[in-house]
Amino acid sequence: MPEPTPQPGTSSQRCALLRSKWMFIHVEREANDPRQESGLCWCVHTQNCLGPDGQVANEESCQPGRACYEAL
Image (cartoon, rainbow, N blue to C red):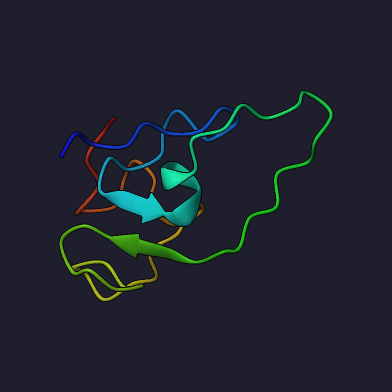
C-alpha cells in the first residue's frame, strides 16, 4: 500500500513516521475551511501515541532534533 501524502497545510518538517487520520482523507480542502485537527496522532514505529523515545507523537513534538525524527 502506498504511503499517504500529507494534507495541504501540514508542516514541511513533520516527521515521516508520524500519522494521523487526516492523512487518509482524500478530499480537496476549501481555502477558507479551517482544518479541524483531532490531535490524535501515532508513530509508525510504535503504532501508538508515543514515539520510540517514550515522548508524545504529534506534529509539535515530532520535529528535527528529536532522536527518532525522519525527514519527509
